[in-house]
Image 1 (cartoon, rainbow over the protein chains, first blue to last red):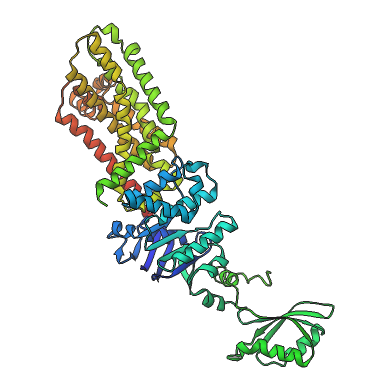
Image 2 (image 1 turned 180 degrees about the vertical axis):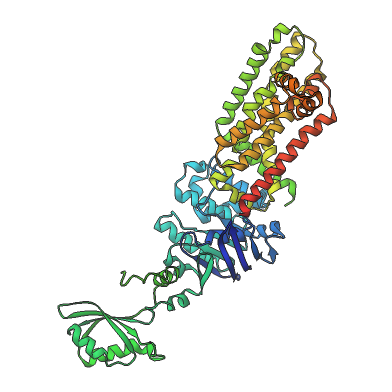
Length: 324
Length: 247
């Protein structure tokens, strides 16, 4: 439903977005990741028709955003960054305005307002002017505006920014639910959000797409993916290391902690381990039983999105070791 | 949705935004007080001894010089400062529809302010027997003048996020449009320039073109002047708004 083809945007000499292409289908939730200033908001502004692209094409529900802007804008709901709204209006008059702009009048308007007020829990503040609201309510008012016409495509720029943990959870649930029937793009800095909500994630850095895949695929790019974390009781670090070197599939062993006969370590699969990678945890368990060590913890790492994010967007620095 | 419902929706929001803040009422009171002061004190309404509103309309350009930029300065600068322009222009509207709608709303607000000066019309009709045709022409001229200044304020407010800068810029341009036709200035100019040069320069002044209305004459050339300044300013507003986004 959203099709972006080699989209670029230049401000003077600076290329804010450089040759970005992707597609979002109905029922998909695409998470947009990237450091500040990577071009996330600029890309979203081009999709919603606010910025004209320097080159490339965006089409939404089959309408070219540059050539048929009105038809394209009708199909979209947009929550801009920092959720702007008209401060002197009341929540109700603001929602009425948004509904009227979307061509909703009379009964259709009333039921649309009732729906978004319920969805975004705005019933307590309907009569208040927006400048008297807390940040969370301001944010949800703007979110309500974006879904008032039940659009097929939703573009949300940092929809959970500034919300408390409960509100964050609610917005995530909402996005996930709406994602079943709509095409949604949202940007965020919170990586756990991507895992919780997205069916696909894209990392952009310096205006370019540097990774694109399901959260699982992205996590598998982590150097930690497939590593086995073990905590053993009843052996010294040196003996454990010596015994583990007997397993061919293990490339490198990193002792994280060792005291009072308790060893915590991480075993990374060898580069040529192949199919044995998946059996690594089993091998280590077998070894521990043979040596009659007590296993306190045994876990295969899925990889960490944060690490992938850091290694992609800051290639010069090494990912922080054992950040947790 | 068609063009007009969208324009009406935006204009309605814009106009009610004036009345939702106390600034509108302050503006109306200041405008009415000053209009009264200029008419009766500086204009010498009673001393003139004639049944006309000349003293009222003569001061209109000077009054509008300060008050119209104050009304128009927030039109686009506020939208840009708060980021609501992003909200507005990603709704199904074109930039020119939004410009027209916001302009019309502010113009309507100024029309309301002008309409509230009706007591002077009643006063002059009660005291004497004025030519009401001239008064109507005077009002039409004042409204066009307000629209012209407003379109300039609209343009300057698109240029900057800062309302104060927008106000000062608009005031300077409007002042220029007054001064080039202001009698003391034209007299001074005629000392070193030919008559046709002075006349050409003066023809760009709003004073030159409002004169006819104040005498009760509706000249198409005057109408054309006011409408072309408005069209030019609003068109340029569109160019400016687009250029911010073009990068």
